[in-house]
Length: 147
Length: 147
DNA sequence: TTTGTTGCAAAACGTTTGCAGCCTC
DNA sequence: GAGGCTGCAAACGTTTTGCAACAAA
Image 1 (cartoon, helix red, strand yellow):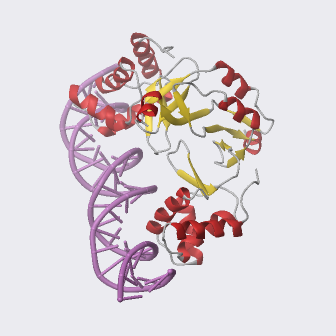
Image 2 (image 1 turned 45 degrees about the vertical axis):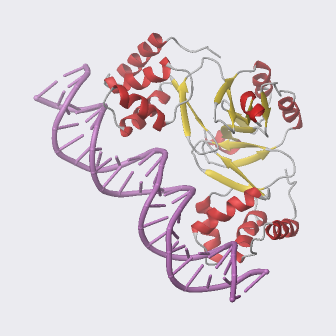
Image 3 (image 1 turned 180 degrees about the horizontal axis):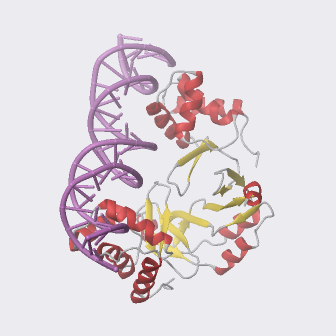
């Protein structure tokens, strides 16, 4: 679950990626990367904007643009919940899925090799599958108790 | 996969549901129900609006309002894809999951008791799970050939 | 007749685009 | 210095809300 690149390595790879595409190393780009890599958890654009705004001058347009860049570089992942909001998190080295509490909204990552294997054996001749999106909604321990 | 209520039964249940909540049986409400039950497939609001507009006078606000009602009555299901769009379909009697082709956008329903069972055994003491959302993105047979 | 429902328009969001000025390289 | 990148504001697309007119019960 903690299998993510160290922040310095992520930065280095992002530099290489930008260089390859002849794109510029702007402070805003690294601010977004750093925010996601320095923290656990899942951020929507609004949350990112709030956090980043506190430490530097940045606009939402820039955040949107650069999140796309970070997705393309595979350093960041995106998950869309059934509230139609996109959340961003640092990429994990192995696939993971999400548990979402309906009550408190908390998003937790889970990994399960058995499940992953099962899904892999599922390849039908009619469909070439990408990494599956598995969202488990429900109530977390804490919220279960509150009832 | 074809395990859905006959349209007449769905209508009857919707009537009962409306009655219980002392809501009115408006033609718009049944037009939406009928559209989803008379057709296979997954409709977003825009598609529903186009179809319904052709056969009767209806506004999008009404469609939005009544889709919520149909969801609450469990006669209609909603799935949100990673394009952040909500799609609506008639409810199936057993859980199903979705295969989505990245190329042509086609959404196909799948059922798998083995997978369902596996997910059920997954109940952790920390989480009470609702029906899982499983989205399988990839390329369908047809689009695989086009390459 | 009563009350919920409708269509329309406006508002409220989230996201994208256009553009003048700025900053990497 | 050139071209990409930024912030800002406007545009855009989707969903919600307010309201007067309407229709189901």
